[in-house]
Image 1 (spheres, rainbow, N blue to C red):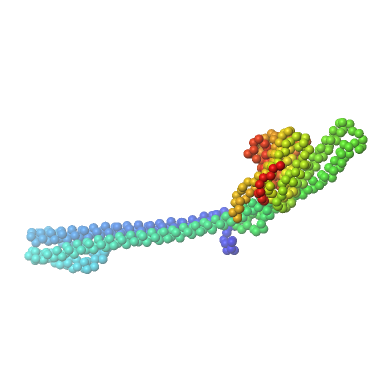
Image 2 (image 1 turned 180 degrees about the vertical axis):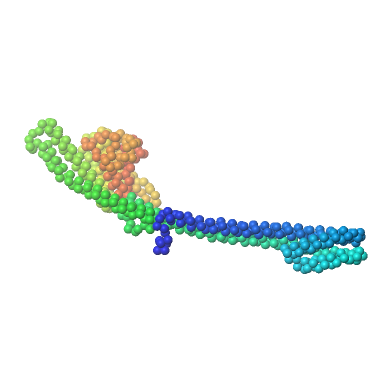
Amino acid sequence: MSNAARGFVPRSLLRLVLVAFTLVLLPLILLVIQNGRSLDRVILLAQDGIESAVVDTRRASDMNDLALEMERAIRRYAVLENPELRQSYLRLLERYRLELEQLLLGIDGGTLGVSLQHQLVYLVDLAQASNEQIRERVVIFNSFSSTTLALDRLTRAQIDGRIQQVREHVIVVRQQLWMLSAALGGASLLLALLFTYLIIRPVRQLEKRILNLGAGVYPEEKPIRGPAELVELGDKLHWLHLRLRELEAQKLQFLRHLSHELKTPLASLREGADLLLEQITGPLTADQEEICELLVHNSFRLQELIEQLLDYNRIQQVQVYEEPVPVLPLLEQSLAAHRLTIDNKALQVSIALIDACPLADSHRLKLVLDNLISNAVNYADVGGVLQIKAHITVGKLAADKSTITDYVLSVANTGQAIPEQDRDRIFEPFVQGSQVRKGVLKGSGIGLSIAREAAESMGGKLVLSTTVTELVCFELSLPNNNDKGIKHE
C-alpha cells in the first residue's frame, strides 16, 4: 500500500466503515437524483408536447369548421339581407382571425399563414359589399377553405414532427441515464472493492498470524497496517505468540530439569533395593523380600515415566530427519523388549509386513512402535493374539501428477474394546481410559500421546481404527518410499 493510501485509511475501524458506506452510497444517491431530474424533464417535455399538440390540432379543426360556417353565413346574408347574419359572419371572421394568430404562435405556418392573413382582409371587405358583389366574390371561399385545410395538414405534420423529436429526446435521455448509471455504478463498485481491500487486508494478516500461532511458527515482524483496532489486535497476537513460546520453553526446560533431577535419587533407590533383594546386607524374611520386589518394580516404573517425559521433551525439540527406514528391525527390537511379558501372557504374535520402507525418523518411529506394542501387550487377553500388519494405501495426486501413497502399519490385539466415550481422549496426555491395564506396571497415560505427536512430527498420523471390530487396532500412517510387494513371516 502506498503512503497516500495509508494516509487515507481512517485510524478507527468504525470511521473506516462509515466512510466506506458513505462513499459507496454517494454515487448511487447522485444517480437517483440525476435520474429523477431527467425523468422530470422528460415528463414536462412530453406533457408540453401533448398539450400543445392537442390545442393546435383543435384550433386547426375549429378553423376548418369556422371557414365553412363563415361561407354559409355570408351566402345566407347575400340572399336574405338580414343584418344579424352579417354580424354573425363578422363574429365568425374575428374568431377565425384569433384562432389563426394563436395557431401561428405554435407552428410555423410559412406561406400558408401569410396567405390566410391576406385572404382575411378580402373577407372583411366582403362583408361591406353589396349582395350582388357578395354573390360574385363568394368563390374566394374555395381558395380560403383549401388553404385552411392545407394549414390543418401542415399543423398535423408539424405536431407529428414534434412528437418524433420528443421520442428521440427520450431515447437520448435513456442512453445518457444508462451511461450515467454504468459510470456511477462502476464508481460504487470500485469504492466497495477499495474499502473491502482496506478492511480485508489487515484481517487476512490477522488470520495469518493466528494460523502461525496455531502452527507454532515465529510471528512476522511486518506490522499490520489498517484501523487502530486491528493494529492493536495484531500487536496483542504478536505478544501472545511470544508469550506462548516463552511458556513452552519454560515447560520444556522444566521437563528437562525434572527428568535430570529425578534420575540421581532414582539410581540410589534402585541400587539400594537391588542390594536388599540380593540379600548382601543379610537374609530377608518373605515379607521383606516382597517389599523389596515392590521397590524394584516401582523404581522401573518410575524410570519408564522419566524416559517418557524425556521422549516427550525430545519430540518437541529435536529436528526430524526423514529417510527410508526399514520397519522390521525396529519392530524386532520392540518385541524383544517385551518378550518376557509376551511369554508370560502366552500371546500369539502374527507379523505380515510389506517389502517397503516409510519415510520417517528412525528414533521417533522406534518410539511409536515401542508405545504401540507396549499398549497392545499390556491390554491383550491372556493367550490372545498380537497382530502386526502393513499395507500401502493410495492417496491424492501430487503437484507433478504422480500418485502419493502411504505406508500403513496396524498393531492390533485381542481384548476388551475401547469404550466410545474414551476413543477421543486416549491420545490426550496423562489420560487413561476406563479399561483395566493387564500388565505388571500401571500406565502413565502419556504413551499414546507421545506416539501420536511423534507420528505427526514425521508427516504421518496415528489413529484408532474403527474398521476392525474383533480386535483393538491402532493404525500408523507414514509417507511411503517404495512399493515392491508383500513379505510374510
